[in-house]
Length: 236
Image 1 (cartoon, rainbow, N blue to C red):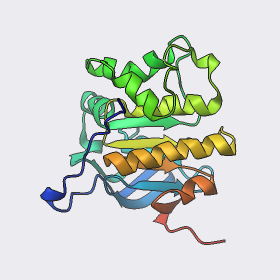
Image 2: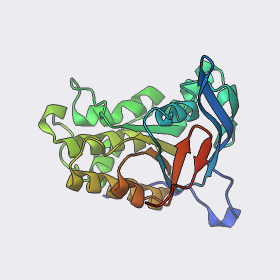
Image 3: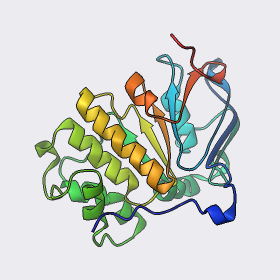
Image 4: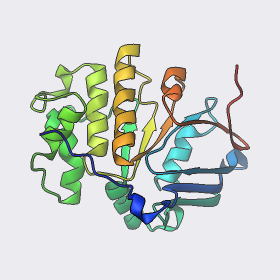
């Protein structure tokens, strides 16, 4: 049985509220601003690529969205909640329930099987695994590989394990930090196929930091983060 992606958008309810709204966000270290006046909004099911020079704070912005880092000004609202106003226990619960994370370095635990890696978010939430792990592994093209050790998989397969882990608990938003950065072009294309398919089928939002033009081209919008905010990138 194929994985039944959850349907998050209900047309009968009319136009949905934005999934993510960032307003006037600023972050500094000491007296130096990393970025300031960052504002953007994302809808459910939208893929947004975030470009920017090294050191401009792209990963820091993702951390602020996730409540892992504080901001010096501005607001982040995710699914109607003011992320920066949450207590640490509340922010941790938000991350467990409503966020999925995909990183360039995979962060797959080497001592666990593929299936156990994917099932970790369900374990943390106290939810039964049932056949959910096997079904989502099949959905990302890893059917039958659940009992393998991570060392037995290629880089592209490991990244798809990370995507399955990010999605298994049905989050509202996936934050992806250079998810194709360590992959060859073919594997990178397969990873983007999965992310695009998930967003289209489920309404999960994907905010992706990338330096890859092919990956950015697969997204609905491309924004560039600068020290003074976000803008549309200038065409070469």
